[in-house]
Length: 348
Image (cartoon, rainbow, N blue to C red):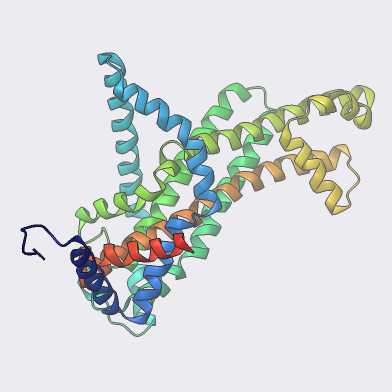
């Protein structure tokens, strides 16, 4: 509004904007309003996995920013090459994930729910509450799959330290684990996309939506995911190496004496093994030790995979629900509604 002296009445403009925001918010259904509140809560109160990734990824982000700002052509070229390689790797993992995602299972799930679905367009008219149910239906099975992959390779890394060719075998196991887990996590996002009507089988351009769904957890695929995974596999490797030393010494001086002599240099994962044994009421013996070390190594790596998958499920759902709501009510209206909820939560 413009007043008599030609100046803007800022108070009135603010009130008009708030009225528009409230009006836009009131157009949402009760379920849609609950989605907006849930998305806002995830922004204000990120989960522990996201906090961990942000914390770990921060030093890497600062290094990347320094390289990008450096007045050095070689450093800038290196930064560009790394960014390109990461992006290319992610896109390839998504394409591979798309080929093994079995999107037809999404359509089958809709048909079992009473909806005749033959294409992505058929999903567009379905209520978001139903889409949420279909998306959540694959959460547990995918968590089991990615957790099992991490557990198997984590245990294998612990056991491989005892092999003569450990220096050659273990780096390969770590690489296989990272590629496999990244592909499985991407596969889950591809299935989420299909559940909300953005499947890749019919429209390959929807890969951009899958990439965008990764943005809120970019540390999980760039700075945070790789250091955490490598750290977990390295811990499994150290535990395996320690177990091999104990086994070798135990043949000469006995297991208990070997543990006392080497215990001061025990890695953290071995301390966790001892803690688990104590909680289970097990008397630590050479046989129990040999079983528990790979089991704990696998459990740690598998649990990390499941944690990443759950974080990806949350952020992926939030992204696709925002896209659907924006298509239905307008991007600006939804952005205002979410921001209003964020402001309310922060004030509280």
